[in-house]
Image (cartoon, rainbow, N blue to C red; front, side):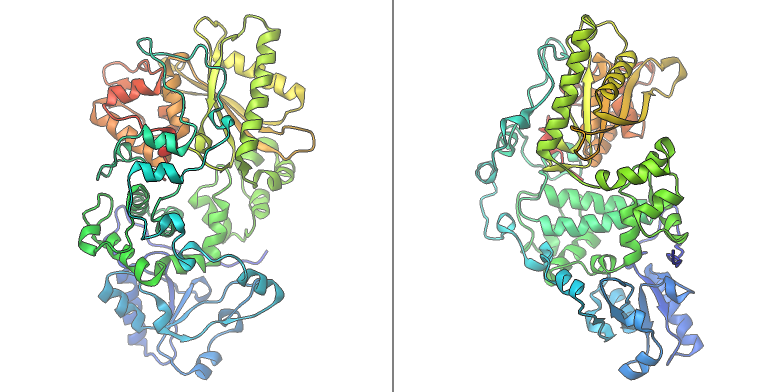
Length: 565
């Protein structure tokens, strides 16, 4: 493997307000600049928030005082100037005046006006195919549902544009004995977006995702949401948690808006909760250029794109992704061979590599239903064979599927026992896994473990989780399936926690703490143990989602409209 290094970054507990970010890794070319000028440019770049690289290969932007193309050619390599499908390491060569423009605008400005030598794109057959691919949403403009001409922002207009799902979209395990609170069970999940909007609370201008119905795709502003989400993912990669949260909240706020932002003035933008003055500047830039300049830099950065792909693997976080890249890993196969992933730790490197092509694929919605249906069938076979063991189990598919996603990375199945069942969840889950393995549906068991309360005295309170590799038939692809077995008294918390989204769960924990409840920072900890009081660490009864909404005095938002991420 070739080895190059992703630039070293300066991290601070709470970084100062800045114009540029770690997405801009600059190297100042000394030609045509004196030593003092080079130092001044480096100080200016660092002061704006860019990473100043001592090693040229670490940079993704070359800053120069040169303007003559022939002189630039003499001092740059073909690799830096030419972009091909096979070698995407070309770097924009930009005049140092770009830094001053960024400082004046208070935002990363488009480099197009400051590029001193246009990048050469080698037109191989592969490149031609790449160029003929579909343009990004930002490039092709708004889709029909994003159109600025759409003036009716009421729920009726949303309902008319919604597509009806198949009856299977209401799929859950048998619900005859659903957990109840004061004799009342949760209502069935809405089967369509139209039904969800009818049952949703009205939009509020608030920072909290608990009061803003948020669809899977923005009705009016999805291209902008895509750009903001890319910046959020980059901030997570660089472990810049404050900036990550700012972009996460901005994207969520934009996604939930019931109107288009294209013609909204700056002054109005900055009054939308979750969008500050700097974010308003970034949004105006998007509508002026059709893109966010910094997002363009990130998309063109091969190192960043590689590391972002690493973080799609289970258990691979930003720091591991960066270390792997710096050590020479360039593909998921490299990563699996040289780093401990969740799969390789439990199954070994060879098995993990064999499964990787299957597990990288997204799961179509119909297949999610098919897997869950087979799991239910096998679960009922066990219950029938063992007669009295869990004859009244109930459950639902959670995760992004429950929020209406067209495809999923895995299947999350949350189940609980009936009111008269006596076998412990852990025992029942292990028996279920053994039967699934015997039937040939489960090919690999990643883990079967209890996620319990952190208090040793309360270990009996928690959920049992089986992480499995599953396939419907001997010839079908392998899929990840997580079966979450929750105590009946905490079924609502488990279902709420495993449904998401991440920001919705984060705001749920904030609301709980504001009401005086004790909630652990981890979303899985909340999903495992629900709510507790300061004076009593035993989990409160939260058998339904509505029981939690009532305790926290927040409205029920249908699962399809909890897509705040």
